[in-house]
Image 1: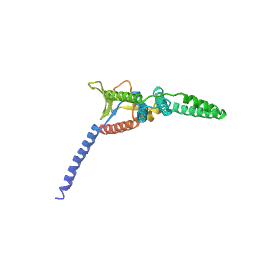
Image 2: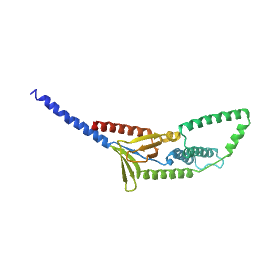
Image 3: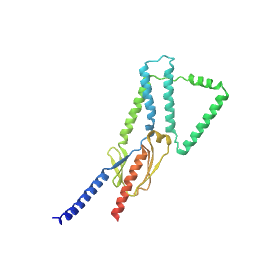
Amino acid sequence: MSEQNPPAANASLPENADQAEARREAAEEAEHIYLVAYPKIVFLYPTVVVALFCAIIMWAKGDPAPDATWQFAVSRVFLLVLAMNLVVLAFDFPRGTSLTWFFAAVAIGIGLWTLFHLNQGLLPRVSAAIASVRPHANAMFYILFTVIMLLLYGIVLISRRFDYWEVRGNELLHHSGLLSDLKRFSAPNLRIDKEINDVFEYILLGSGRLIIHASNERRAIVLDNILFINSKEERITKMLGALQVRVRTDAS
């Protein structure tokens, strides 16, 4: 009896190994990473959030008096956030350029402080000039702005369902078109480069650019505005690294 136990134990080992290998391959097959390139309008979400808060404030306070200062303050805040958001969309701020702009802003701030300190009557005149600008909008304006932007976001999300990339198993897939046209690229020799072209876009949504070099494609595949790019890049690197180890093991 004792002599038959070792063969039985040894016979169970290959079965367990096969089950583990099957589970590993099933997990790899189920693993997939979606890459979606969004338009720059997604970076306007801070303005949409501020417009929603402005609408709530204006609606809660009711129709303001013609000379109510708080409505001018609400409009100034909205316009300031909108202007800053548009600057982020209009220009790219690489890391080196952003550092230059930072030091330039610090120098301008020091220069203005020195100017106001040397000319005591200048600051009140500048403040009065800014206060004389009295933009105003009612609650309906902010509500309509928010609704229009949300509708645009909905259209963007729907359109992205018909144009996206998928990394899974040992291949890269490109889904496009209403009928979901599919183009396949080999993944074992895939090379991916990550670029952070705009510091502020990265701060807002972790956005960046992925450059994919496929073995059976002559031109590089450039995907701009990939959200949360660091986590996507780490997952792809882990997947491709595990795939390369498996291919080398099988080849040996």
